[in-house]
Length: 555
Image (cartoon, rainbow, N blue to C red; front, top):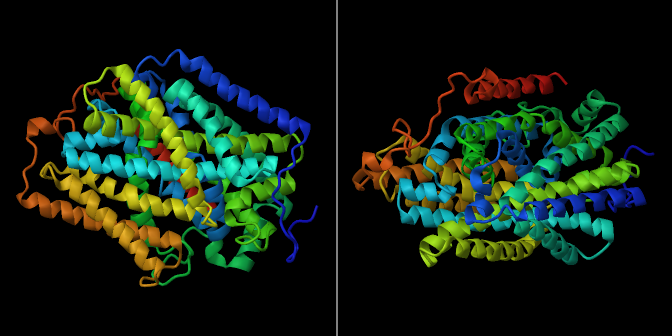
C-alpha cells in the first residue's frame, strides 16, 4: 500500500463497505432508535423533554457534555485544522477548552443551577432585563441552527459516500434519523445516545491514529517530515507565535486572550448546547462535576483528532484541494481501514455527527419554547401545551438545519467557519455574563447593549478582513482578534450605559452575582472524597493539560 497519493493522483474518499461493516452500522442504528423508544414513556412534562427531569448522575452528564461537542466541529473540523495549521491546533483543547470547562464547574454552575433557570438566556433575564433575554434567545436560536447545519452536512457527506446518493438527499435522510430519536425521548434520549456515541467514536478513531501514523514511521518521523516540508512552526505549539512570527494560528496574545479567554470561555460557559447537559444533573454537586468530568477525556482528544489530521498532511500532498482539509479523516479511513474496522470507524463518524446535531437541536427547541414562545408569544398555558410546541419546534429546527447545512459546503475547513460563528454569537454573550456576574453595578440595560455592540464589532471585523481592509495570518487569527475586539467593545458599552443607568437591588441580585447569597445552592464539600470535589479535580486536570505542552515540545 503506497504511503502517499501521487502528485497527479485523485484521492478517492468513497467508503466501500463490506457486509460486516453494513451489519455493524445497522446494529448501531437499531440501538439508537431503541433508546428513543425505551425512554419515550419517561417524557411526561416539558421539563422531562427539555431537561430530562434533572435526574441524571454526573458520569452520564459528563460524558454527554464532551460527546455533544465531539461532532463534526471536533472530528472533521479539528482534524482539518491539524492538516492545515499543524500542532498549534492543540491550543483549542489545552487553552481554549480545559480552563473554561473547569471554570464553568467551579464558578458558574452554582449560578445556573442555584437560580433554577431552565436555560442560559433565562439567567440574563433575571440578571438584567427582558431586552438582554430576548436578544440572547434570538442570537442563540440562530447560531444553533447554523451549527446544527454543520453537523448535518458532515453526516450527509458520509452517507453520500456510503450510499452514492446525491448530497441533498443524504442531508434530508440524515436529518430525519436524528429527528426521530429526539422526538421520541427528548433530551434524555439525546444524552443516553451521546454516552453510547462517545465510546463508539473512540473505537473508530483510535485504530485510525495507529495505522495512519505507523504508515509514516511513527510520531517522531511524522514530526520530522512535517518539520522539513512545512517548517518548524507547523510542528510546534508556540514556535513563531511572537508578534510578526510565522505560526499559522497567529501570535501568542491572540491565542491566550482571543482563543483562551474570549472564545474558549465564551463557548464553554454560555453555550446552552453544553450547559444544558449539566443542568440535567440530579443535584447541585453533580451539576458542578459535569463539565469537570468532561474535561478529563477532553484533554486527550487531540491524540485521536489532531494527530491523524497532521498525518494526512504527509499522506496526501495535495490536501486542501484533493481531498479538502475537511475530508482528511474520511480519506484516511478509505485508504487504510480494512472491512470490519471500517464499519466501526464509519459508525463512529455517524455517531459523532448525530451527537453534535442532536445537541444543537435539543438546545434550540428548549430556548425557543421557553425563552421566546412562552415568554413573548403565549404565556400561562398548560405544561403539555409547551411539550407539544417543543416537539413542533424540534421539527422546525431540523428543517432549518437542512437549509444551513448547505452554507457549510462553502468552506474547505469547517473549523474556520465554526470559529467565525462563535466570535459572532458566543463572545458578546460571554461579555454580558462575566461582567454581570462579577460587577453588581452593571445596570439593567447593560446586558442588551453589551451583546448588541459586541456582535456588531465582531461581524464588522470579519467583514473588514474579508474585504482586505484588515490583514491577519489566517482565518483563525482573525477570529481571535475579532473576539478580543468584540469583548472590549461590549465591555465598554456596558460600563458606559451603567454610569447613569439603574441597576437591580441587592435583593434582586441574590444568587446572580458573585459574593451574594446563592438561592438553594449548597456548595459544601465536607465529608466528600477529594477526587469527587470540583476544585481539586479541576485544578488537577488543568495541570495535566498544561503539562501536555511539554510532551508536544519534546517531539
